[in-house]
Length: 209
Image 1: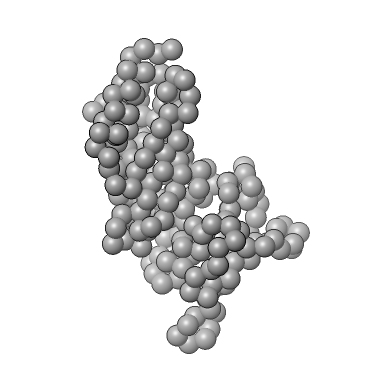
Image 2 (image 1 turned 90 degrees about the horizontal axis):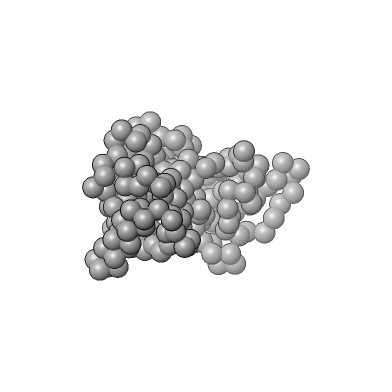
């Protein structure tokens, strides 16, 4: 067991519980406290308000001199989240030289919450999400809400979700559970326009490794 890292993560956990931040939560899932599961909710008054996303954080034994590896397990359709790996694009997580040892579990999760609710459109890692957001914010809102719905829940805004495999087979509407599950699936979202009766079509390609 890495004594110093363990003590630091215990401190971080205590800070997180004491502050009771709105919209973020986390807890360790390994005895050595190096692996954590977390959940983030979009900020109020943003298009992500009310949407919840799960993450896994893996801390190295060198923490807090080295940042953790962070991955969304429920991957949002977001300009700053890699659609294949679930890795968020934040400078201090991507570049160890930008990491500051003063950062804590709470500050990491708060930064992710801000990133989720305020997409940066420069150098996106999900180009399709970025282009959709720029060209049609209404369509983008419908996509993120459709993809975040629970299995069996009725779609909103007259949205119909079709999942098509490489062989052309269709599966019932349901929420994609993981990047592994949706390996090489093409998600086609057909949005009926309420205003003019037309159809918006957006293809979200999720390619597994």
